[in-house]
Length: 346
Image (cartoon, helix red, strand yellow):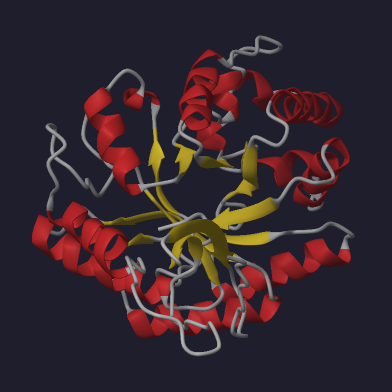
C-alpha cells in the first residue's frame, strides 16, 4: 500500500531497539503516529523543561525508513492528561505557556509531521474552554497557523463514527468545523479515533457520508476493537471496519492503534510477543499485502502503443521491453475520477 492511501499503526518508544518489531512494522506500513511521546505532558513535564529525547529517537526511525508521521497531539482537552503546573495558572499565564509549547514543537519539527491534531477530544472535554473561554480551540488554530502557515491541522474525536453518545455525534462535530471556519481558520482534515465495540457498517457509512459534505479529507486515526471480544471476533470486526473505511471515497487514510505493547495492548493487539500475527494481524496482511495492492501486471501494447489497466492508488514501476532494450520508469496514481494517461518514451 502506498502513501497515496496511507495505512499505518501507532508506535511507542518500545519499537526503538526492537529489531523484530521494526521488521514486522516496516514490512506492512509506511505511515505512523506516536502514541504518547509527543504529547505536552511528556515533552514538558515541568514548566520550561522541554525534553524531546524520545521523540528525537523515534523521529530518527521515521526518517531512516522514509515514513510519514502524524503529529498527535498539540493539546488535549481532557484534564486527566494536563500537567499539574498548568491547572492553577491564570488565563494569561496559560496562554503564554501554550504559545511556548506551539513555538517549541513546531519550530523543532517543522515539516516533519504531515498532520497535526490540534485540540484532542474537544467535544468530550473542556479544560481549555473553562480556562480561556469558548474560543480556546479557535485561538489554538490561529497560533499554530501563524507559527507555520503550511501546517495541516486536524480535529480528532471519538464516538463519531463508532456510535453516538451524550457528548459527541456527527452533527455537533460538523458544527464545530463550521464554527472554526467562520472564525477564519483553516481546518484541513477530520480525525475519527474509531475505538469500536461491535461495528455497525450502515451507521458508519451514513456518518462518513454526512462528514463528506464538509469536503475535507477524513482519517480514521486510532482504530481498534474492544478487548471484550475474543481474538477471532476482534478480527472479524476489524475487517468490517477497514473495508468500510477503505471503500469510502472521502476517507484518505487509516491509522491503527499500537500493534504490540509489552504491558498489554490498549484494546487490540495485531501480533504476539514473538511478532507472529494474531488473527487481527492476518486481517491486516490479507488486505494490505494481498487485496489492496495492484501487484504485477504484464501485457503487450496495442497497435497504437497503448496498454490499459486498473490499479490502486500509489506508486508504480514500469519496465518496457522494446527492440531488446528495457526502459524503466515510474508514475503515481492519485485521487481522481478521470482516467490517467501516462506517456513513456522509448
